[in-house]
Length: 407
Image: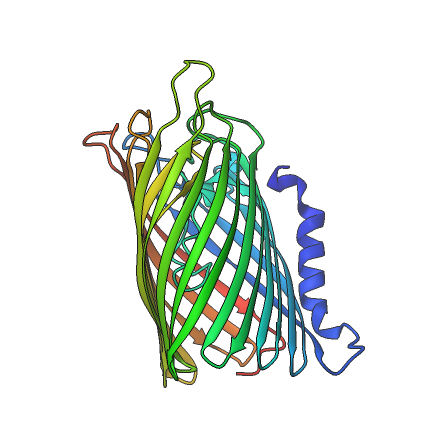
């Protein structure tokens, strides 16, 4: 669907978002929180292609979402549909319409915690394969799946569900159970560049409370990677040791060590037997909110599939900082860096390095209306592209309207 054919969707998104504040509330614990951002985007290399092939774009962006939220002393529920539309007058072939949905449900008692998180995305690969500095998962959660190939015009659909359960069967001992299922498909399949894959996994962990604010958890994990390239599908088994601390409700740290064995399937086309590879796992990080400053930082080393059609080992660092200087003015900055390398030795995968950073500000014009502006820089390099690193610089500015914002 081209952006020029989405005029009705623009009107619908704006109406739903702006009208959300007027929705009838049938119970005291339900609320609707709309958010509408309208702005301008510039990017010097929109698809992050090598030198002399850059595509420069500039134009309008509309980003609308509506959070439907309910809460009581034991349970919280949140559903957020979102639409993001871009229109570039000088490059209409780069116009896009992206759709997202997030569901969060959590139930807590004194001894148990049950949670369900579901995510859906249907978007152009110009966004799916170039992750931003936004924090899109919890501390130490690796996420991933992007391969950095955005030059080929395509669309990606992602569906992910993650249920989890935790039970304290004694004051010092806890049982954790979890599962995840991810399904990624592309409109057009490009083997080795943009390939469908599925990732299923289960885990069981036993936690030992070592102090009032500290817990050590030993976890066993099993996963299945279904990749649509012969010989790249694999089973994986891992053992992890996590140490987490919560000095206060506003301070959390973690440290992780572990190992994973990845067993690849036999290649029926070549007759080659599948490899068995043992990899190490690691991670560390901190999330902190003190007075006027919020900080998020973590580093991880993990193994999993990507849209390139290969199972890779990924080193990742994420950083996000926000500082409130006055009740109406704040600044933020972020960094995300990843390095992907092949897990199997006999593979055509080209190692990839990717980094992006931004810095910006938010000025609260009114309680419900803000002006947000930022500049960003992105860099990427593949081993097969010696001396031809890809670079991109960009800027964005938008007015953000949140009619139910209280802070």
